[in-house]
Image 1: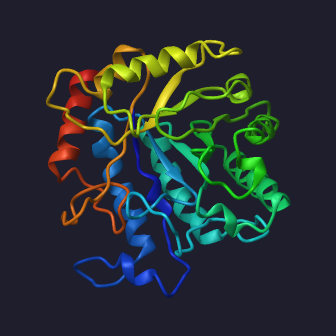
Image 2: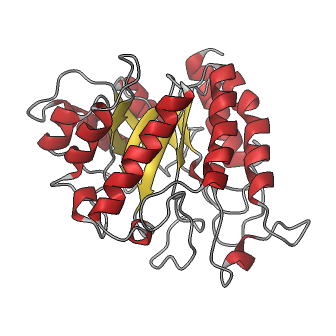
Image 3: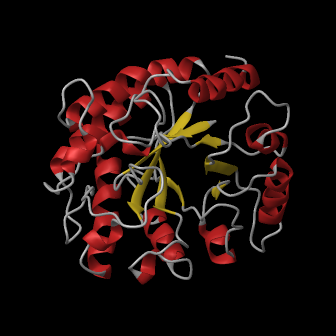
Length: 305
């Protein structure tokens, strides 16, 4: 089971927008505080049975959903080189995950931020550099999500559905001492993956956004298993903003009944307090809201932790 915690290494390199992320108690943004508080909570999440979470090197919308993204949140330079400060923060998270025996999903790109890379060559360079960094550090517990929702407004063609399998194959081609990283990519809510991705991916990522009827979750899972080339890979929802955890049938229980992992996506909705949401920046990484408690309590019940 997993949760969408994509802002674990978040920062904003745009001085015009950084004021949006001020902490309520200090009135300033601090990327190191954000990562340190993330790391402090990981043991708590694991105690409920959370074995995985998604962190993304270009984050996700810090407002939950956004049309435009003027902030600059990217662990890559325009040419695809690594920004050391981002990877220092990522190292803290991955080291702690290793200690806790968790298997994080590291996403590389997010739509609305992929245009921070100059061209396709830069995208390929970014993938190679990030995967080399992870392999060189010796992590064997890390899963890779090439990009979040490949079918949603990416600028670079190689990050779009028709060609994204090329980057999956690139990740698979890299190894250290025969050890490589398992890799996939995701699609927008309710979408069944395309054959090219299903044939290439080590595991299948689905999203449940927009799927209001839990019964449609099982339909989506079965449709995915029917895609030509599917070879019994694990199916993992790593984003779904439907809750109703107190009800017997919800998207979480429906996915579980269909033998698919499920991932909690929560953000701070209109007029809600700091404790709400794991995607809204600044983030309260604790389990301090009713929605978070609802997810983690059901998680504990299902996993038996």
